[in-house]
Length: 132
Image 1 (cartoon, rainbow, N blue to C red):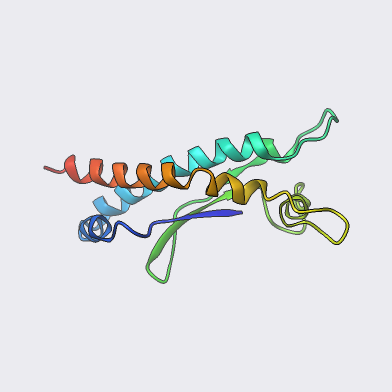
Image 2 (cartoon, helix red, strand yellow; image 1 turned 120 degrees about the vertical axis):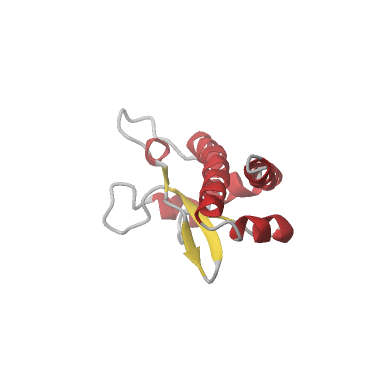
């Protein structure tokens, strides 16, 4: 799974963090909007077979916002468990001894990094401006 974190833009983040539950909602909106962009990119890039069945691209999931060590983030990608229907997604992403890595999930984040950062900044600022 790919991960989008709220980092950088420290001044904006500090202002939003001081707002309590309103700030939590502003951060959630910013991360969810960015995650939707990455999810769309992953759905386009995820490998698909020619078989008429569900594919990884049909099962890209967006997690709830999580916080670890004071950093808010959201995860995007197929179920990464070993027992899920799309457990093999990790093989296409990272490769194996016989299959080269395709990095479709990582590339979805890297190729959109500038847009992600702009979206987060814009959404944080929009949330702050809406409080005035």
